[in-house]
Structure formats: structure tokens, C-alpha cells
Image (cartoon, rainbow, N blue to C red; front, side, top):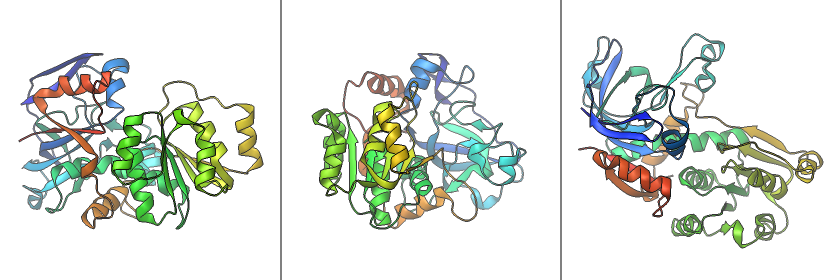
Amino acid sequence: MKACVLHAIGDFRFEEVTKPLPAKNEVLLKIKASGVCGSDIPRIFEKGTYRFPTIPGHEFAGQIVELGEGASRELLWKKAAVFPLVPCMKCEMCQIGEYAQCKDYNYFGSRCDGGFAEYIALPVWNLVMVPDGLSYEEGAMAEPAAVAVHALRQAGLEIGDNVVIFGAGPIGLMLGQWAQAWGAGKVMLVDIDEGRIAFAKEMGFENAWNSKDGDPVRWINKITGDRGADLAVEGAGVSSALEQCLGCVRPFGKIVAMGNPDGDMVLSRKAYWELLRKQLKISGTWNSSFVSLPKNDWNLAIDAMVKGKIDVKPFITHRFSLGQCTQALTMMRDRSKFFNKVIFMNE
């Protein structure tokens, strides 16, 4: 089969590799759509994966075309997305169903081969069935949609809450859609990229602000009538955004830390005073919940797409064939063009 293979940091090749075979309780998925996560760019060009060679990609969906021993025949030819974390099923976190906190997990696209390929063999357990009414592209977007709703669930968003999201990339925009569907009051987006701000407004988020144009805390206070936000999501992974979250939320407000940091996160004394004096609650969020009960973030994402509560299709700005992977990833690394969500499509 053809695949995009990372042989070393920055050494990315489109080449022929051995097509996998499904083992017991596995299926062979013909990948139809695979999204590029923002984390894939530093992983490919700066940090590397956990082993080489590796096929990156953890946001993908496709058609089940072959069954391993023990896999139900009812799965054949069905459409599915994939929860990319493969838990050990032995540690204490796995025993209570908190698989994202597994101590010895595998992960498609970084610890083992992922979705930038024509086929992948994977456990039946990791499948998320996608109804026929949704496209493969939407199936591939289920992963970031699940990550976004998981972040809001950490904060316990309430109807009427004013929400501000620092970082207007794909997940930030999905957070905005989830907040609106959840019954939030005002939904505000902050970024330093004017292209992202313009795109957010095109997507219907009228309250979008470029922090290069002025202090976002003042802007948020103006939008909320000097009340402040009820909930702030730090989705940029930078100290300044976290400080602004602390500054813009009301007393007894909530903050969710979500952004992956490139370096140390440092707080000024003034920001720390905000945390103390306002008695703020800060929650971390990681990955998504993939359990049967009480709520599975992936099922929530698929159901919301089916019902039209969230619409991820407009967020896709670029579609490439798998053979154009180097071109696509280089464009994203160099930011030579504006992009929001980039998808690799397979016939």
C-alpha cells in the first residue's frame, strides 16, 4: 500500500509499504479521510515520533474491508472513525475506564503507525461507527470534535454562561460551536492571527478579537458589560493566554487549560493574585472520554453532527491526496497559505 512515512525528524516520504493484516479481534480499515492535527507539524518537523519509521496521523475514518478472527461479520463494509489511543487494559486507570490516563498506552500516529496511509489494522474496540448520513471527512473530524466537547465537560458549562476561547484554530472553533449548542450566552474567540479571526467571523462568530489590536481582557469586559467571562478556555499553550484567562473571568469563574505548550508556562504575581482573590477554578483537559457510561465524547460528537448541532465541514479549508502529503505538511509548517483544517482524501 501507499503511505506517508516519517523516517526521521523532517524526513517524510510518500512510498510503498507492506499492507497490514488484521489480527484476532481486529479489522482492516481502508482509510478514506485523515485530518492533520496541529500537533502533527512539530511531531514531524521538530520533535519526532516515538520510533522510526512511523506513519503519522491520528484523526481518520474509513471503511472496514477485512475482518480478523473474532470480529463480527456485521462490521464488514461499515463506515467507522477511530479512537486513536490503545490502552493497556491493566493499569488502575484502565480498570476504572479512564483510558486517556492509561500508564502504558499505544497511540496511532505517534507510538505506532497511524492514518496517513491507505489501510490500517486496528482493534474492534477502537472503532466508532459512523452513520451513512455522515461523510468520511466528518468521521475524521470526530476526534477533534470529541476533544473539544471533553474540554467543555471539564468545566461544567451551564446554560447562559459567557465563554471565551483563546485560540481560534480548528478545535477552538469547534469549542465555540459546542458552547453555542450547549446554550452558552456570548461566545468569544481570541487569537493573534488575523486570518484566523477573519475565518472565525466567516463561520458566524461575530465576537472574535485579535489581541494584537488591544488588550483582550478589556475587550471581553466590554462585551460582557464589565462582568467578565464565566468560563475561559486556554487553547494556545502560551503563558500570556493563561494570564489573560485569569484576568478576564469573573469572580468564582472557571478556566480550562487545554493548549499544548511549546515551553514553560509562567505566571506573573498579578495573575496569581487573580487566581487567589477571585477564587477561580482551573481544570485540565486531556484527550477525550471513550467509555460506555455515562457519556462517551465520541458518541456525543457523532450524534451532534447527525442532528446538525455542530457542523464541522466548513472548517475544512484544504483537501489533498495522500500523494501530496509533503506539499500539504510543508505548507502548514511554513504557513505559506492560510489554512484551518487540512484533510488527506483517499479514493
